[in-house]
Every structure is written in C-alpha cells, then in structure tokens.
Image (cartoon, rainbow, N blue to C red; front, top):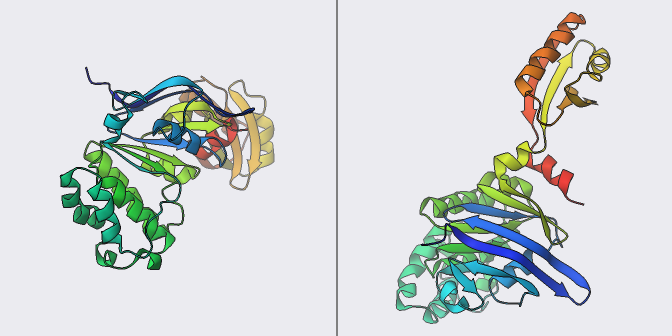
Length: 306
C-alpha cells in the first residue's frame, strides 16, 4: 500500500560535534497538504531539510520520502521532488529561461516542456528573457520555485520561500501554494513567519532547539493555547475583582481592549462564559463587549518555544 504520508521521520537526530542540531524528530507530513515546519532562526529547520534531501547524513533515526526510504532509495525519491534550500543560486549572466533549460537538461526530456508553464505559474513569463543578474531577490526566489516545478513534483520542499518577497509577492506566493495543494501535491514549507504559516498551511510542527514541541492541524495548535474571553465593562477594575476568583478562570489581565479572561484547560467554555456574564450583570456592571476568543498560532508559538 502507498503510504498516506509524503514525509515520515522517526528518531531523526543530527549532531555537529557536541552540538545537537536536530533532536529525536518524529515527523509525519500527510500527502496532499501544505505543512509548515515552524521555528525561530537557528532552530534546526534547514538542517532537517538537508537530511531529508540526503545532503547531510543523519546521526540517528530513519526517514522516507514518498514511501521510499532515504538514503537507500534517495535517487528514486528525488525524481518526484522539487526543493528550494536557503537562497537559490543561478548563473547570473544567463536569462531565467536559459537557467531553467540547463536544469531541464539534467532531468527527463519532458522537463523541457514544463519550462514555460513553470515561468507562468511563478509570474516570470514577462521577465524570462532577462539576465538573472537584473532580477530582484524576490524574483530569484520565484525562479527557484519555477526550477523546482520542472520535476512535476509530488512533493515540494521550500526553505524560507517568502524571504525578500514584497507584500504583493507574498500574496501571489500564498495563492500559488494553495494551487499546488489543490492539484494533489504536498508542500513542506519551512519558515519563521507565523502569519504566513497560519495563512498557507493546513498543519504544522513547531520546532525549538532542534526538537518538535507541538505538531498537528493549525486550528488545534492554536486552540491548545486555551480559551479566552475579551470583556469591556463600565468598570474594568471591578470586573477584574469579580472574575479573579471564578472557578473556571485561570487568569485575568487588563488589556487595552478591556479585560482578558483566560479559562482553565478542559472547562466547558460556553457554560463558563454564561456564568461569567451573569456574575458581571449581578455585580451591577454594564457589559460593552463580550467576545470569546481562542489563542492565535502566534500566542501558542511564544508559549512553547524557549
């Protein structure tokens, strides 16, 4: 049977001398999804990608790409994988189109037929005949994606792909990634940009100091940060005093919008909200705002990384 996962890693570890760069990583990336590998700079994201692609050996653990064990069947796996690792490099004295022709020559004959389509999908058709030395950093990043598409990949592995893109370029990139997923491709996107991962990806793993500290669907990762209620009343200090001893409340803070109430884990959020609003009314407070919220991915990220 074909594995339901495009990437699987178990106990994956990498040491550089006494430094532990990747620490016992367990990773499962479902096929046909956009998966974010999210962590601060220096968290070991690029090192993990280099191991997956066979560019550096692992110290311990096992991994597979598209159901093929790596490194044993690395060559066969890479035939259907496109990747950008760190900043893509090209022959700057050649045009974008000629750079892709050089890459296509090393692949199957059909790769040449994909050049024009890859340039169009990355928004470079109008600049394809310009020398790469005239390209902006963002254009070179997009040319790197075009190069990755020459393999007609089942799996795209992109390391910090939105670096140096302007807001319009980021918006186009977001739509492009979702288009790849709609076609049934899998995208592993390494990034330190929480907002982009939250907008683009279906699932994510949060990595810190080489170790995955949380993994799952984006909504579940954010929800794990807890439930909260944002409240504004006629007297927020009085509201804080009333709610600070409520049995369902984990914490109460004054914020610019009013009072933020964090609920204890596993409480019935709806029942707690009803009781909190009742107590405020019984306390003679006029409620101007009462909004149940969940933690954002950013809040969850800051909670779990060191």
